[in-house]
Length: 296
Length: 296
Image 1 (tube, each protein chain N blue to C red):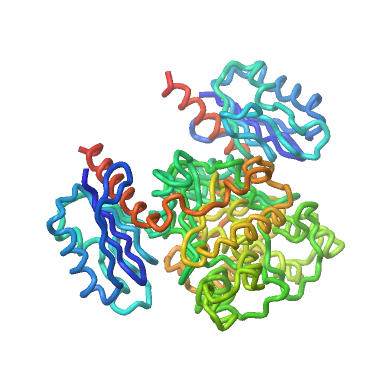
Image 2: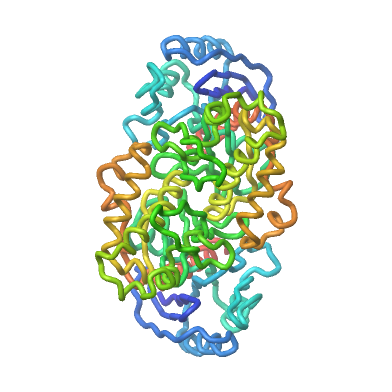
């Protein structure tokens, strides 16, 4: 089986071909420019690939409500050319195959459920902490869409007592993204994350904010697994700090051995590593193909 | 059709009989005492009612994982006699009918989807703000269970700048329940909520905490409707304060007309009023009956 996968990121696009086992056979990557430059490259890549379906996990916000007149569009992004851009429609006009379409983080969550760290589970959360913060939500065997789609990177935060940084989110100032995404780290400390020593105070503060949002998500959704990806999470010293802070925050309230005894297996890195996004898009494509066949 | 419904609250039990249209034909209520006193009253009530199924929406925490050896138990409550009590099993041993079993707030969310304020929607959140704070979560057409079940009343809060109250949650101090449930209002102001004037500062602070948790829930789950029930929400002056604070918190980030233009229809009272809990249990019973028939 040959399924197309598009990881449509705000910084770069990754396109690939994979199969029903989550194996990526071929991939290509290029920077995200104006859509009039970027989409032709996507189309060119898939032109001779003879895929049976294509899955897209996209940066957002995007319209994923099938009944909406702007379904398939990137909506309110400030990225030049991408606001109200019909990404899905542009591709559908060229390729007559079933399409899967969801947020990049929902796609990654889906890939992790299918082949990664949440394999076989009926729920998980996928956080990406990088240039921004995004959260994919999978519950009771389904990706959560709802009114628009999850935007869990912007939850409000309680401030770390030693942190007087104002936050960089243009909408909310000191929301999670405003306090903990890569640009917040750089603005707070004057150095990029990877330039800070692993025992720097920055990481305790970073873990404080991430753990706080995870605590809230555990309480609200009770996920069976929490997966933390993205550039900032390459700093592996964050994981024990986050796990410890989550345990402190919950203070034994959620009586589950998965949390109380096995938190090292509960809050984890992506099982698919750097491929989580592309494999997630592949999983969306595969699912679109299955739905298409079932509907015939 | 005759379906039994049990709203198993921490303060009182309500039992009733209803039909497939959500109509309650008969009901009885008694205080929640030791289970050895309370469950016999439940059994006595249903003994001659010839119901086809029974739905239970229970105070918690409870075990709602069907594979668990303690499925159907109330788990870690400090209420005398109820810790590790097998409520579902006790009733199943007497009545040979299909049983629905979920948290009181999930039940209420389900009832509101079936017959109330979220009728026909595929997602909603149901908050109860009373002696405690609980949140029921319905997403993509399903009640959310996950690892344990949602406990959204205990999300951490950012403090109101004028509020120096320590919070009353024995686990988390100043979590949402610790800051905004009925006992927190009384401890903070020395008066019960219904004794405070409607223009008292208490309501702005109350709305601040509730709105903050709703903001987080909108961002994480993107529900199509938010329903606020429970004793504290009888203070109807809270609704406009909460809606305004949610809009301020989101600051236009979630680009949906349901929020930006129609928030009066987005954050609402229970459509089923004081019957939300019992109707929710009825809906669980109805669903259990349907699942039982489908599985035969």
